[in-house]
Image 1 (cartoon, rainbow, N blue to C red):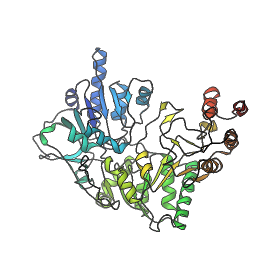
Image 2: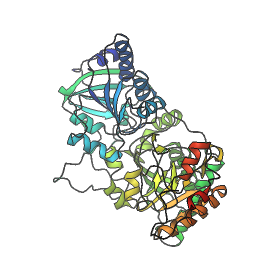
Image 3: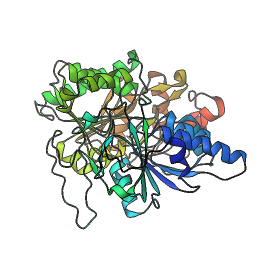
Length: 500
């Protein structure tokens, strides 16, 4: 490590940041995110606010972060602007009450937006690193996110040198930034294991204005084992994919898989990875969860290209203790590459993501509750859905103890249109929407995916329509949502009133 860099405390680093600055932080999920400097920045914001001094920053990251970053700064009312994705309760509250500006966007586009200047200047890049050399080589930790672009565009760089992460991580990352049009070339990625870049971020060492040494674990979010409901969804998806092999629409050697985050995703990956008729496969995805590492150890996952090791603390330690073995099987890429539609389409990736609600024609809402309340954001689901060989959306058929149907006449907010969504799966079954008309899609989704308590309700809605290519009616399209807002339960809509 270079000795010319100024060593400082987290408080001294935080003092360099001014009210109104834009910060670009490393990481993707809590993995790889800076921790000590944001905590110090939050403490400073609290003190400034007590003395009636304004202090807020714009915060750009790869995706969501954790309690150290989003959590601490949101509680301190220190975030004026946030993009592109978040999962923090306090930050979500501030976004929905309008006290924090939030731009929800496809994760693959964030670095490009930063380079083009659409999101303003990056005053400081705050980067968690396992190592930094005298000539400006930065070895990242457990995720990449948009760190290469933040470093390239930032006026100044602050490094959190986190000793929890081994220097031997060097070689697991594949750092590559495409040129801007019209000079951009194709990405030479023809299989998940192809490497096209550098193991380090190279910066001008003069931009590194301070190094804060830490030893802090990632703010891991261990998931409970998949319950029976999620296992059933997983079994339905696995059976569907196995059938696709049988009929020849998936080659015998299978195709790379992308999977979202959460209990359902873990349940699906577990079912797919252990299905006797699905061979060991590769992953081209944005996050690796515990289930992937377990499947990798069992030989069911051969290789994984990802942006983040978003795994539990115990599994991350296991990876670090056997780093040479895992470095042959995992590559960490910037989100601009892990989520790149060109590579996703070329590889024939099968995408599997979760939905808040799906309508009977195949439109998906993955961001907003009741049409207006932001949950987390679109994340990378759109990057994969738009380019996937097969795009699959999953969700339990009901929520809130059956009071909400996730299969609705019309989604209250549209993130993924019927033109991109090919397959829908719940615990009740699978609807293959490929090559189907709107009326045919409605029939498949209602009969295969909706909860039995809601099927008759949905059929009554369809009986209201007279003509049209897409059988819908404005007057009753949101009857489920209106019924819930009035009574707290979507069931027992008075459909007869719509016939008047």
